[in-house]
Image (cartoon, rainbow over all chains, first blue to last red; front, side):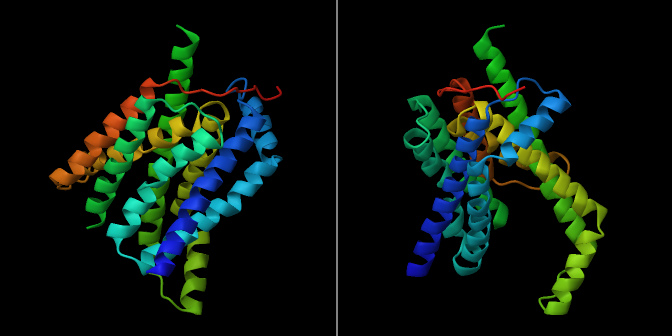
Length: 126
Length: 141
């Protein structure tokens, strides 16, 4: 049970950490001025040269593999709600690390999505 | 059309393309792996599976869609909030359920429909908030 708990925390940290690092890096790159193919190519080139994007990739890979390990260790009824809990942890990360202003309406939406994803995935896997 | 309205439409369009790419990518990978068949858990079996995936066009198509998903995600968060893009992306689960009913004629139970309604309501709530609450810069042209 302890190893499942440890792996759940590791999975959530890697997943949320990776996505927040990716967002932070892309905010540094800035939005593309248009969707012209040449502008998008330069935009991708900028993203590839950003250190935060490279920091995010191994974290996202680790989150993927830790999810696979969790699925082999624990029942789906534990793993799926825990993975959907990422939406809530991610929103906390966005608020405190990325300094996003998360309104009450957005919080309500995030919690609804979290519960909804749990219900859909649990019935989908049964 | 106000700047905020344009920004919301631009963000939701990119998120929608992101969701479609993710779903099509998963579907293509699933179809490709079905063409290859069950992978034998042994050194030789895994090696054969690796070679088969490299030579399978459907798998490559799936990978292309998943690259499209990643690029859309990176583009969206370059201007929009992470706390906006992340829950909006969950709309894919609702689309999957509706497609399963319409195309595959799958039976979907009440619990799953409640989940879909919650996701759609949640995404609509998040969609009504301002997509960007932090400073954004424009990439060098």
